[in-house]
Image 1 (cartoon, rainbow, N blue to C red):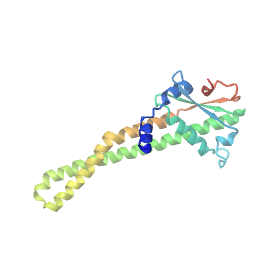
Image 2 (image 1 turned 45 degrees about the vertical axis):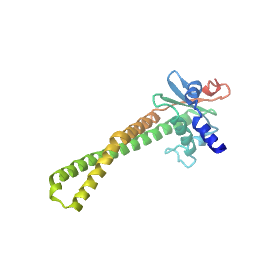
Image 3 (image 1 turned 180 degrees about the vertical axis):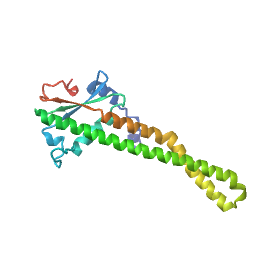
Image 4 (image 1 turned 120 degrees about the vertical axis):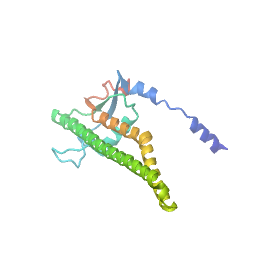
Length: 200
């Protein structure tokens, strides 16, 4: 009985995400993601070599997980709170974040092109198998005819799934990747006296 009551309580639990975002993250139509770091290695992977830097996986996970909670219509500014970085260090951080976003965007675009190619193949397959069924159906025996029906519905099912479900998912992935590739970076040296949205 207690388990059933807990289940009902969990199902009826409300989320105040929008309220928290409006209070802590959003300002003037822009989302500010705060991130505290102690040194360069919190952002740039310690396995990187100079001139070919990459982001720390922990930093990427924090940033992308946070960004996923923010509605896609808001551009993002990443506010990095921490020590005083030199201008060279700031440039490395900004350039690496931009490069990582561009890489992710390029990979997403390639995947979307592949999905569009598969979509075209599904259209062609559906049309050809439909024509074969219409023209040859009455001349085929039961078993070959069933084979063409199966092929037709496999193509048709994939086609419908792409049009009504997957296409919108791919568009959303493209928008998310585009937003991450457009992130602006700001540096705040003294967190205690900053205007962090988390401290307002």
